[in-house]
Image (cartoon, rainbow, N blue to C red; front, side, top):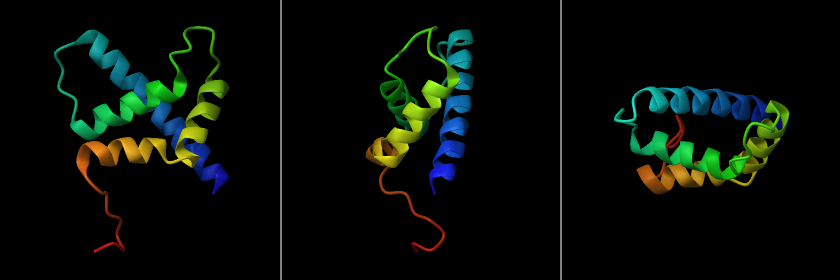
Length: 88
């Protein structure tokens, strides 16, 4: 399970970078509620460390946030409860 958290943390970091670049290029770009909530939670977990942070520090911070349920809670707060394939 721990390795899966790291994989998800890496994916979140990549997605966040893509959104940051997109929003820098087009500040008027629309971001969905869940995506915005996830991005905000990622930014909160990273603490806006700035250019001195290493990717490994960011991945560790995101893995901790995932383990504590912070990313999921932020997204569900914005979108309502998420359901998995066995939840219906």
